Every structure is written in C-alpha cells, then in structure tokens.
Amino acid sequence: MRCYSNSSRPTRRQALIGLSGAALVLGAPSILRAQESTLVVVSGGGSYEEAFRKAVVDPFQSETGIKVTYVSPADAAKLKAQVDSSNVQWDVVEISGPAFRSDADKYVEEIDYAAFDKETLDNLVPEAKTKYAVGSYVFSTVMAFSTADYPADKPRPRSWTEFWDVSAFPGPRSLRERTVEFALLAAGIPKDKLYPIDFDQAFASLDRIKPHITKFWSVGAEPGQLLSDRQVAMSSAWNGRMQILQEQGAGVDYQWNEGMLSPLHWVVPKGTKNRAAAMRFVAYQATAQAQARLNNLIFYGPLNRAAFNYIEPSVAAKLPTAPENIDKQFFYDPAYWEAQSSSGKTNTEVLVERWTQWVAS
Image (cartoon, rainbow, N blue to C red; front, side, top):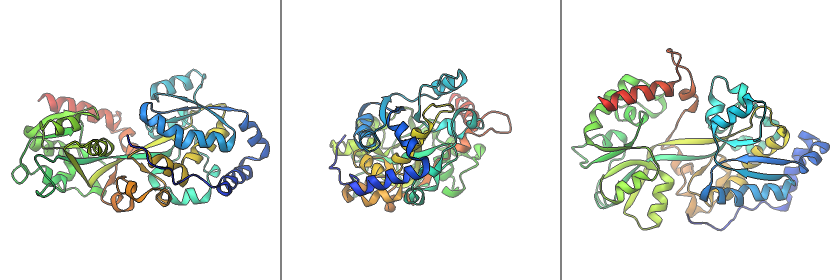
C-alpha cells in the first residue's frame, strides 16, 4: 500500500481549540481523569492498523494524553459476550453490525454528539451520524474489468443493466456472493429505491446472469486474481483492492458508476468504564483532519466532507467519497439488513437462506 505525504497535520491552534471544546463539554476535571486513563481501541490489523496508528491513534495520544491500547480484530460476538458477562474490556470498536440491531441499546452506548465540534457535525454525511455509531470510513464495491478483455479504448459496461447484457458485452463474469442490490439495479430499480429489497425480483434478475458467472466470490482478493488471470472479463470488486493492483501494474481497471458504498462505524460497548474518553476518541477520529490523514494513506473514503480540504488532489480522485465520485453511487443500508423481517428473522438471515437454496438449484 502506497503511503502519501501528510498534508493535514492539525495546527497548534486547531489542537487547542479541540481541547478547549472538550473542556466545555466534559469539564476540566474530566479531562484530567481522561489523561490518566487508557482506552482499548479495537479494529483491523495489518496495513490498516499501521495507517490508523499513524493517522489517528498517535496524534490522539499526543494531543489528549490518553493512552491507547490497540487490539485486533474486531468481533461482534466477543463484544456481545463481554457485555452479557458484565466484563467489558473494550472501549471503542470499529464494527457496524451491533449498532443497527434491534437490541442495539443493550450492547452499545448511545453516541454523545455533544463531544463533537460543530464543524465536524456539519460535515459528516448523514450515514455517518447514527444513534449508536459514528462513521469511520467507507469502501465501495465497484465494477471492475480485465484490461486485456476491455482496454480503455473499448466500450465497457457503465451500469449493472449493461453488466447483465452479455450480448453487447461478452465474457465471463464474477459477482460477490449474496449480491442482490446490483441485481435489482440490473432489473431497472433506481439506486434510491433499492430498499426494502424485493427478493423475488432480485433473484429473478440473478437467474438471468447466473449462467455467465464463473464464480461468486467471498474473499476480497479473489476478483483481482480472477481478472488478472483472465478467468473473467469483469467483476464486482472492492475499490481499494483494484487501485492497489493498478499501482502494481496489474491489468485491471474499474469505474464508480452505481458502486455500493459500505461505511464502517465506531461503537462504544455498553458498560465501558471509560465512556467519556471513548466519546472523545470517536469524535476525534471523525474530524476532517484525522480522516484526511487516514485517507491520504489508504484508498478508502472519509465520511467527513471537509476532509477533502486536506487530502492531496491526486489521492482524492481515487477515493469513493470524493465529490466527483460519491453521487454516482449509493449507500448500503446496514439498518435494513439488521432489521427483522415478517418471519421474525433478520433480513440478512432471510437472504442467506434464500441464497443457499438458489445456488443449489
């Protein structure tokens, strides 16, 4: 993963403003206690951890005096077990699911938006400001191509309706398993009318493309391998994976139109002993400067619009939430998928059961 120069380090004045704002909200004694505390922050490992430590954790520790212990990976079952046993060891967790469940109030704290400065609140996209979670970053599932089969000077599909059109755009395809949003777009449903999902219409659409699918992928590295090896001519894929492969010289390309934006969120486990400091952390990571530092290092998008004031233009064009990219896409709806259906099962459980039956048919 390429690292970029950091053009977004907060000035001393910005840091002082952030601290004074927190003092007004929490009171000076609370800040003094927070400076002596240790937050356990849980998220992903590998190159993401390296980028996140550099962009968010280290500056947060320096500016607040709050020590951070970083743990990976995040796990919803472990979070639930800690809360159920009244033995909460984590303070902040980068995971979306628990915040959108019907029983979210049992497992995660309501976000204290009084800990956020007005500029941050004004610039966070709506999908980032939820009752029990705050947006972290967003990745996009995009339409990708083998440049051997579809070079830049050859017409390519520009919509999922065209991706489904195997006569006009021949070649084997791949899709992520349990893909229904793209199937509905291919059937002509507008991107702002996808939810609630019409399962019958989605699977009827999938029936049309199924004979042309070489593989339904489940692991993020698979589309790049399938495209590079020319096992498929086109595939859905994660934007960050495709961008990294491009920079490594692989024969892949992608486009943003009708991409699916999937946000990750930070939650605060119910019963944390460091609630005030945890809220300061989720507020800090949501600032334009912190999100810009992170997204100068990874190919995923900030959820704070003002972050693009601090992101290098050459990098911004490659990020899914850049002004020129975001409106071409739609947001995945985690609240819908965690909600209960009329059968009493979550919509995700309904999809998994139906997908399993469909694949076997």
